[in-house]
Image 1 (spheres, one colour):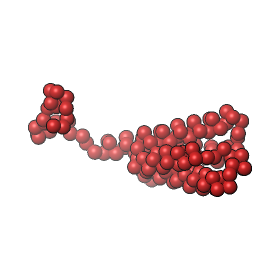
Image 2 (cartoon, helix red, strand yellow):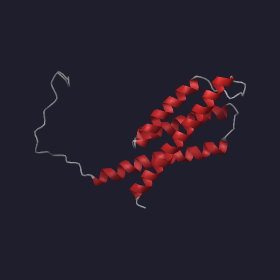
Image 3 (cartoon, one colour):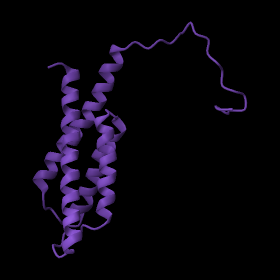
Image 4 (cartoon, rainbow, N blue to C red):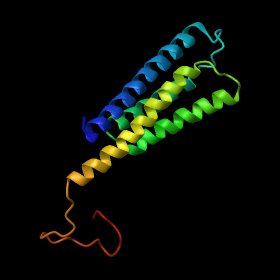
Length: 141
């Protein structure tokens, strides 16, 4: 397996883990909203914001975005840090597994960009004349 393939595999496993997390979070949120918060999970309508935010970050990771992969890992760590600071250590083994998948996805996006940028030469000089930016700073007229 080449390095590009390893990076793509890490990215794929990262966004797949994100989709699994989205489905589980959405399922629990909808269930708790139907039966009430008698389970003591603390899930509410705000959890739907988590789902939408995670969906955007997972889509960005799918598109090989380093920023989205990094934000997904940071968002996950922030959520788990808040949960653990409150003394709730439920799901710790699964959290470690997801942390590994998200960290590997971040590594994969960084390596993918590094490896594919080296493969495609960038032309600094071009025969085509370039239009300078307007003096007033406006890009569109």
